[in-house]
Image (cartoon, rainbow, N blue to C red; front, top):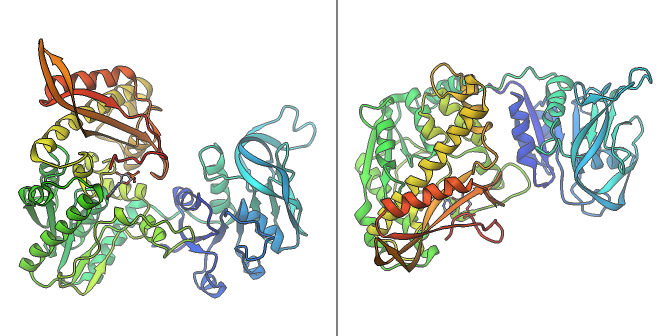
Length: 559
Ligand code: XMP
């Protein structure tokens, strides 16, 4: 495993994880490292290629993020993106200057398809061959103030836009390449092809990073590491901990114990669904302990309405319950966690652009669990890779494609005090909402995808199932959506009688990184069906709102 590796050197730009994801999509393993990583360490890792990312600084300013000129002398192909391309020019003797105007947004681009970076890109211009030019037109996403005003010795420009003479450059003798725009974002429609050309073509990577081999290799490694030891895992039913459980179970069977805490703030039927997959009689061989702690949580939450306080109580109570169960089990050798690669990068261990969302990680490690070591089998995977590994392990699609669900669960989707009655209301409303949106999306797939993809079910490969669920969706398909209970009650009329009931808010957002988000344009007819079903079927609700707020200024959750 991981025989060939590309390094993504992080200069602090906003799309850096995206660069790494795109490289992985070319079946090439890569890791993100800060630009401060010593050259010696880079050499030791023996990369097949190096990609320098974008970044917020100007490379000619004092104190700007930089790299050693020796990085370009390792004999390893290097591709600089945006800031990375400017830095490459600057360090190697070219010139970078502030442009008169910022170039931002979708921009027409002309590329030289004779360059190894741009093979197969764009449509040829009419009469190109007669003019003995091999330029092609395509579109790219630009975002820069500075530009390369003079090429470094040995480089030539291989792409330009109306206002940027060096939109891409190459020095084929030294295998150095630079791209001023962002091939990693979807707004550069042929960007993936360019990155593929670099890692699979120029760097010569064979593309051996695949989830089926990952699963096999991990199972072998876990067996070796754990030996006949015992492993304990807190299973939340979310994608990461479920896939970790599946992987560990395949490797070590009953040496694994999973503790699943039902805090009474899960979505409708969720506890039973998790139990059906991982509990006795399910498809996995492991010890499954379900703790029904609903009453305990409701007791602790009674009378509490402040969001942060609720979060803290729920997080702390989880640790207490988990510790109690762990004490019953006694000493274990390993505590397993479903940490994934973005957690590693964002905690500052990998890249440069550290973003720490402390409230999203449930209250730290339990103090009273007796274990020797932590085991994190998904530590190197991006979310989509975790999903593919989950499909590979045979975990049901419903679990694998679950939308994100916050650790404090419905506790932060009920504004104000949480009670068992309010939990029931929001569970029912949310289930109706999810059912109707899923139904509308299924319908869309039936009407818009080819027969093979339109039908769910047998015979599709892991990659096909994945594309069907993640990539072929209506444009309004939200990345996260849920019903929340506003703490507001209002007057209504039902069957000639006055009501004074709760208002439910429906939220649905489109987002890539969950840091910014837009309200999703769910078709009005779908919303109307949801509204009338909720009013008719859920007791205690007489009004339904649709939340149009984007993030910022709102957040995705309402508390
Ligand atoms: P916000 O509300 O901050 O949410 O825009 C961004 C993403 O994080 C999830 N979220 C949480 N996840 N514990 C979690 O585990 C939390 O306290 C929490 N708050 C928000 C939210 O569902 C969304 O996906």
